[in-house]
Length: 226
Length: 98
Image 1 (cartoon, rainbow over the protein chains, first blue to last red):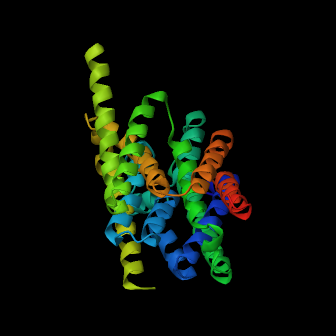
Image 2: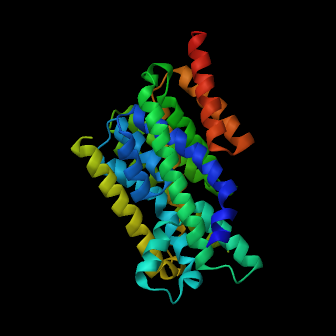
Image 3: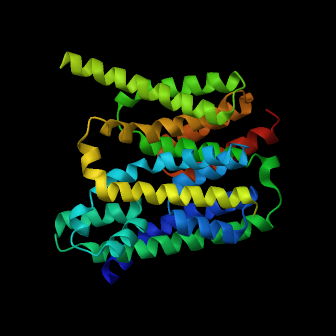
């Protein structure tokens, strides 16, 4: 367990900076530091939390904000499924704890280490995961403490920090040119629906669905050619 | 915190854990199904939609700052660097009265 806990420290330092920035933004839109800590400990998913908080702050419905955030977590179905060998044979409560503390960073590190050393397993995953969730919860809380003490940054364009964060997330999710047309479709449909003065939550759903349809049609066309 | 804050945290936490539990018990089956591509595509499409909803109907300064953030994202692929450069561009453009 110690091996995982120490090995994850460089990645945890990077997550701490991101967590601090998230906490600062969350405090500026009305979350107390302990509310941020509670969210970070219970949710433990950075991009999901930042999306939900932004949607909440811009007047989106609570359920819509939560679902928009949750949708970003769908990748965890694949991530957790890939851990089936690592978690095999463990008691259910240990597996449930392990999947909660599994994030992008400690999952990727565990899988990378395991590729070279099959002896790396659940102890490494849990050691690194405990460090990650602790660092994430503490850093977001510290960001919220500082954020609450700062003046209202919205007049300096703080809201744009969320937009910039989404742009960075999109860059991180970019895999290949096959995504280009679905992404353009999503962007255009969402923008059009917003300009029609529909609620943003509906625009986001419409844009995502339009992108999925575009992706499906492209795949069908590709399969037809194949 | 208001009740809305509490509900947001509770629903988000339950959804996040439910997705992980689905991955634990049904992840392999879902990944082998013909719907697996939706899991791959949906997160990116949601994020792009979020960017579009943030920019639609906004003044030129927001679009220019978004362009700066996009360049930063392409060059650095780093969330904090992109947020910092985008926010700095937005503040600078506002300062110069663009």
